[in-house]
Length: 228
Image 1 (tube, rainbow, N blue to C red):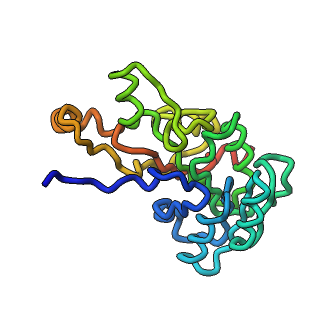
Image 2 (image 1 turned 90 degrees about the vertical axis):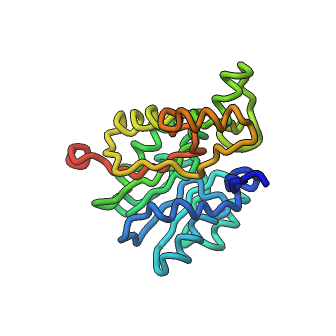
């Protein structure tokens, strides 16, 4: 019987209900106040409150219907786009989460810049970004010379920005953030294609970055920014 691998949790179109529990592991040990940007129906924030009892979780969500549902689970939800127009408190949050959100924004740099003063001392941003170099994207580019948008995943048709690990790190640097950790998440590369499996066997080290559907980043504003 041929070996199998579990499907990615993003292989189904149910974004509003994804709790993104794999991101919980990147929360800092002390985490009292969390802001979930693009919280949708509040699934991630609810998971935070379940695993970290007593944590205060706020959400920001542009869709009115989703924000209304999120309000049933979170401590406070603001309906609107993340930016200066929302009355969010400065120096308040231990974590600001962007779980597959920045790629939907026309200016993710502005979002990171806006997040910095909202963080409490020692606070961090927790960011998940789809990996443009994932195998399911680069294979059709190289093999079929095609880039086909999909309902979900790395090539989601609603994505406005695309990132590799390297370009994401550059974005954090341009926004004066220090990246504390980077980790590939949602490994998905196994395939019935003998050629692709052989390529990973022969060039696994060089192809390591193509295994991951997303990368998770934890970053904090650099010290010089905090005193500027």
